[in-house]
Length: 190
Ligand code: 5GP
Picture 1 (spheres, protein in one colour):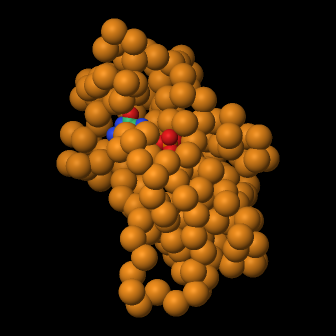
Picture 2 (spheres, helix red, strand yellow):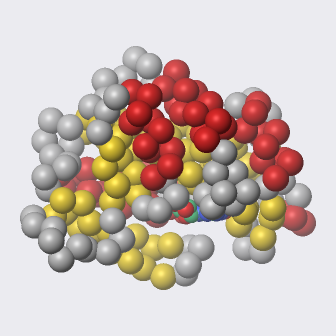
């Protein structure tokens, strides 16, 4: 997606340990117009797929997810990193965050993910696939069908796609980074 690739090259910043900072337009300050273009592209790619719900994980996935839900007129559910005291029956799994270097529990109420759901997951980044693995587990526990996963940016050198495809789930990402070595952003050609 050209607009996204151009923006990553213009405003993305490399950090040590393979981290790309995109907080000028995706996950701190946000560009709603670019986010809309991103979601229109996800919708184009999943046009022939039946979807009844969008899911994501807090916090950075919420912006693309709500835009997807708005454009498709579908409900949006996000996996929470803290269990609210008011949550009843829930599904729970563990996710390792490599940006924070720690494990955390994520939960979704059984009320909002269950048998018969055909869900599309969206998130800002695909790195090692740990968040994706957690979502795959939550969908399996719920008996929901995970029809696909969509990422705004995939860091191919961290191999998260292998986790998703090994689980038999379709994976789409809109900008693929081959390398961040020497603080140089190398994007895969389209
Ligand atoms: P994974 O679970 O695939 O290892 O990592 C994905 C999650 O970690 C995403 O939800 C994202 O919020 C965060 N993340 C992974 N890599 C990066 C990165 O390079 N930059 C930023 N800003 N977040 C990242």
